[in-house]
Image (cartoon, rainbow, N blue to C red; front, side, top):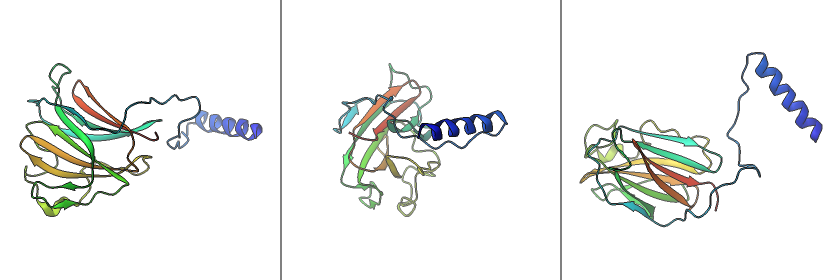
Amino acid sequence: MKRWGIVLTALGLAVTAGGVAPTVAAAAPSAAVACEAGWGSLDKALATHSEEPLTNVRTGRHDCYDRMVFDVPGMTTANPAGHRVGYVDKITHVSETPIPVSGGAILAIRIATPVFLPGTTTPAYPVSALAAPLPGVNLTGYETFRDARYAGYYHGETTVGLGVRARLPFRVLTLPDRVVVDVAHTW
């Protein structure tokens, strides 16, 4: 088995040296990666309201968790955007219309900013359009994330339903210019 590892490594180096970059899939955490523990799955909240607008939502894959980032340019750690993040049985639009979200569990993510989600046309956002995936977010290939749906804007909060594989630990970070939600791959 060690020979195959050496051969594959040499082949990868030869291809890279030849100017063609090999395709690399997202790797599962190896024994050498120490994943943080202790995030828990209870609700997390910060009771503030940013005067800065929400401008973008993006995602990323990491060794131990999947990440969703809400960009709020101008936000600082001293004046962060408020948030409420927690597991729910279902997501509904402010009209009480249920919004289908795929996955074994659903995280409701509410970000307190004065502007509704970019890519939408009105704060009310037509209920008929809510079944569409979150604009600009592609979750193909993620280990934990399954689905993301915009659930509307109401009273200064943008709500997103994030479908995940199971009810897993998560954390919320408020960093300069963004609110970050990380969901662990395992307990």
